[in-house]
Image 1 (cartoon, rainbow, N blue to C red):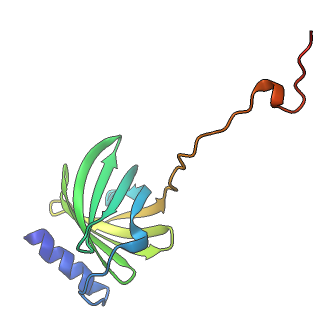
Image 2 (image 1 turned 90 degrees about the vertical axis):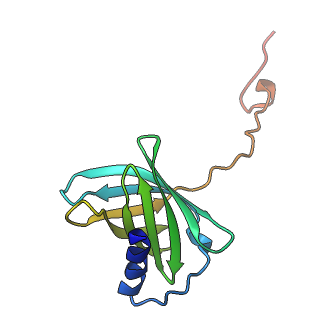
Image 3 (image 1 turned 180 degrees about the vertical axis):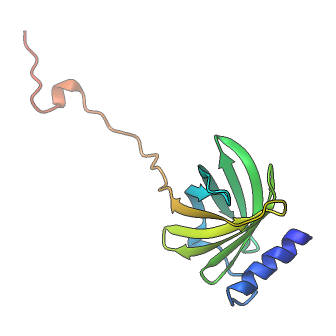
Length: 143
């Protein structure tokens, strides 16, 4: 309940209406460069998935393991997330094309951390077409 209240407060801090919008272009996987309130830097990955009601599910992946899951709401160009797992807290990100930047906090930590998110492009699964050696330019079969 405290996380939900904090999430609503974050939305109102940015002067945005509390009417949630579909996540739309925010859905995807992001590389995260973060800094803890104590100044320690870290890297991780965030995966954002849209839900049918317009909200979103967020997975925080640290060192290859699921560290936390969250619920996200988009209001204009702000994505607000309440997360829970190895750590619980709230985050708010300013959306800008394929990047986001934001701040986060935890109930038992004094201070505010920062994060910069960069979208990781989707990999294409189209198979690579290989030509037989004889069909490659400059290849000759000698007898």
